[in-house]
Length: 446
Image (tube, rainbow, N blue to C red; front, side, top):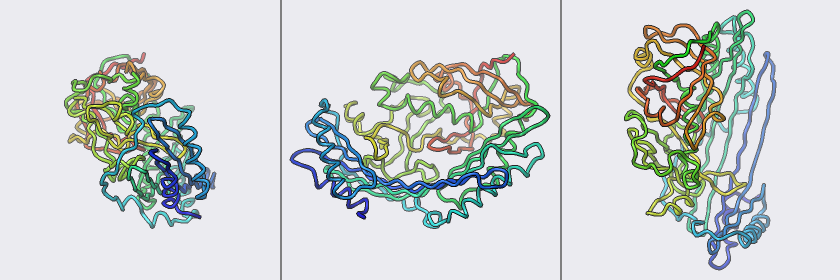
């Protein structure tokens, strides 16, 4: 079996005349183990290996991909991509990025984690569930307790001179608890991502899920009011994830972003700095280069509330003109050409401890969970209306739990209302955020 590098080389060597050819190859092994009622609920294992080819000639782009290929099948994929290109409309912005120096990130790969046997992952899931149902008598069952990991390799080569490869390991665990009291049931959730399985503190994740569910027992519907609001990392993450779409140059160029044409404007609070940075090793989206071979780097989308620009891949950068370069945000799998997506997308860490955010929001509400953000937020107008649960803040302390609240506003108003940024930055998937304080938000209840 040819390795990924040999397969990519075969694709590039199959180029004809003045056409441009790029090969992207990926191999990944993923395991997930889940537990329920003290027994193994499930154990899944997947192994994917494939290669995608872009062929560009005179602005015509064709794509083809093949799973678990031989060298001959890769060459056939190049032929297929060439034929597909002949049927496509020309676009002068179909370009391949040239080679650029990138910095190796060897710590992305943890060899010890890659060798952990399935039996140990199963035991971790069993321990996670056992911990979750032993911490509080009101939590005696869970909806999900899962541990997973992935080992992957990426190789890219092109006629433009790109030759890049890296390996990585990823690990995660998630637990959803059910806290009950009388006829009431509340859900608690916690989630963690790490570079290796040995870095997962499953006990702390179980404890957090238990605490979050129990804290909401006895929740009542509050009166409608305008109050200070603190969003913890879980709630803030949901809103931040919505911003990734409108801050894609692809969306802006298609007129599908509320931020299109607003570069240089003061949109957010001066406390709000939003970053995409694939070089942050603590972030799960860390990578030395994107899926076109462009080096990763720090892109400040908002600096002190001012919109600087958008995330780009090679195509959108060419289309933008004016010397715009790819920000290293070309993302894909081997089954399709690259689109624009974030790497580590996060609000820059602030300096305010969580306790101080609560003290500054006296009489307000800590929002712990929001529902319907992605369906309830309009990426073009920025308007949103979502459900929320949380806890009243009184005297700088957490008081009675609250449910069935509705938050309605716009994303620009929300960004402008940031009045405090916590020092507790935490990543969820590719999105990271600290706790955030908003000076005033309208909560609809009774």
